[in-house]
Length: 135
Image (cartoon, rainbow, N blue to C red; front, side, top):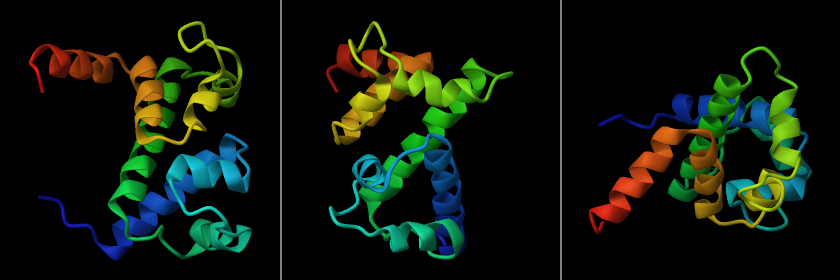
C-alpha cells in the first residue's frame, strides 16, 4: 500500500491547482469541485499553489485524483491542442445536455466520476462491469 507522505500530498495539491487554474475556475468553483468547505478563502488557494497541501481529508484527495485523471484523459483526447480542455469543459455536451463543467459543479463526487467516465472508456467499462456483477 502506498504511504501518503506530506511531500506526496503537496505534489498532488500543486498539480491539481495547476489544472484548476488552467481550467480558469473561480474560488467557489474550486471549492465545489474539491469538496472544500464553503467560505474557503482565496488566500488558502494561494497557499495551495505554493507551499501548503490540501486538508488531510480522503474525500478531498479522491476529488483531486479525479481532477488529475480528467486532465490526463483530456490530454489524451486532445494531444496537440491544450486549449481544447477548457473549451471541452465549457461547451454543451450531448450526453450531459449541458457543459461538463456544469456537471462538475453539481458538487458530488459522483459528478466528477461521470465526467471522467465520459472521457475515459476504461472507467465507463469498470462502472458497467460493477453494475452487471451486482456490486
